[in-house]
Image: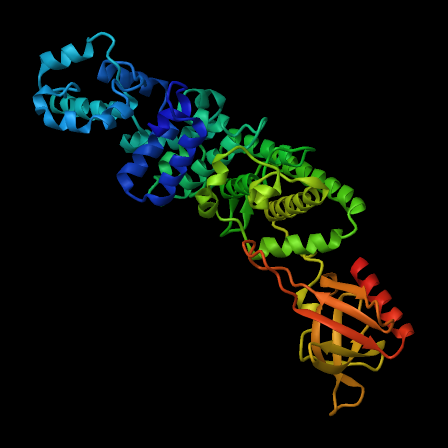
Length: 501
């Protein structure tokens, strides 16, 4: 029923819900016969197959309301249970009685619900198998010679072949993001979960160019890759309706189709690679526009990269969120996570552009087998760490007293363009100091003390590692008192310049 809902508009289940249920089914189910047959139907069922099914069962597949509504059935449970089984108004069909079956098939104005169709199919299938040998309708039933011929012809998969497979064609058409990306998200989820399911037969996937499980990816599905490139192109356009979660799925699917991670080889054609590079250039231009508009751009740049590394998107968690079933929202007041909604305001648009740049850059470098060497801008191995010993002979130091609650410590503030560093002199080595506290300059906030011109209030917030944690207490909240107001002004200027850098 879910498969028919992808293509048939007569069903009462909308396409997004059908795709969601299919994605969940492929995600959690590993039973080989069911997964293989379902993937076979979605990817391989053609027009001749549908016509053969109709000829076999002698009737058109139809979907309509049941003869009795659910409310009526629930309102009269006692009346139904008191009747004898033979007197129930919803009489059962005896499939072994030819006269009864013939009367049922020709009964006028009889409405048959979609849920009853599979039962009728199974009953007729058992009758057909007892009399005649059924013909092979799907690829999993093909002989070795047919599979060999399929392997030779799989390079020729084109739009004409796609038009003959109504369900797979509907799945590709659902990737259209002209209005929004709701159907596109679940269509990508179906393809990914179906292709990555260990019970899905490789021959079925390769028959339509889904080269996810095979090492030779030269015959990848060009129609699907064209559509994925179109999604990436639309995602970097102004006022794009594509969310970060959808774009991440599109990039993951594209890499699985054309890139061999074991051999580090990309099989993407020059035409498609040129389209990816064009999208990368467009995302870079969009990033430059936000760089000129946002004062705290570098802080956002480093923070978004850190969030991506700490919280990578996972498909199983995205499918669990019910908000993905609703049309995409823009307001942050809805409580929907940023990657699952559209941006609101200039700051969120800048954040989205930064994320898009990181995703497309990683894709471009990976397809060209180039190692990332520039991002992040701040390298962890080049930073000073606590308890490190530093040579202070050529450093600019400002003496200060740090007030934390009722405790006072004498420290030296080091002038550094990247980090906020507090030093305690090393009593064992003259001219050296031990790092007692350090953090990135971009996390530092400075405020003047209204009562004392020699003092500053310094607060440092570390970005949270978990996006679901709303509270973020400061790692340092202290009052710094300097020897005079001139040194206090100098320290504030150094800290402000470091943040701007």
